[in-house]
Length: 109
Picture 1 (cartoon, helix red, strand yellow):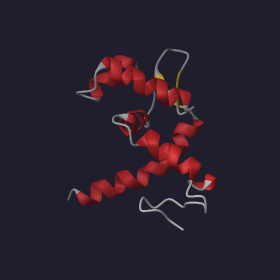
Picture 2 (cartoon, helix red, strand yellow):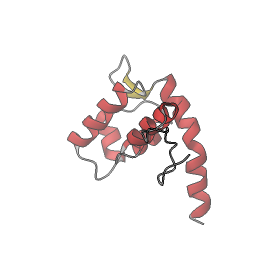
Picture 3 (cartoon, one colour):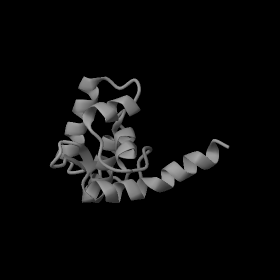
Picture 4 (cartoon, one colour):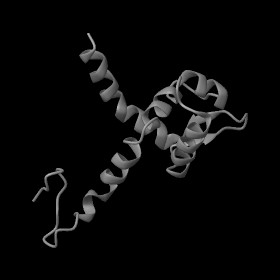
């Protein structure tokens, strides 16, 4: 049975544990700037200042917080030169999100 939010609920009314991974992913990806960081890093590593420049209105403190969250989730890391890059899991997620980015481009025409 699905709840109004679309998630399956067990007979006890608690969320089905099998949906926990997608709910965790949606919680992370739904935060402001998270998907933008992934999008900016998909082309390759960027230093913090360049990444911030590309993200226009994102403050340094917010960008630092988002990078920390993505690093904790093993989606980003600093490379040997100190630039930020996607991890293997981050690249995998970026590829999964490419369909959303393609869809958004088709809708803007």
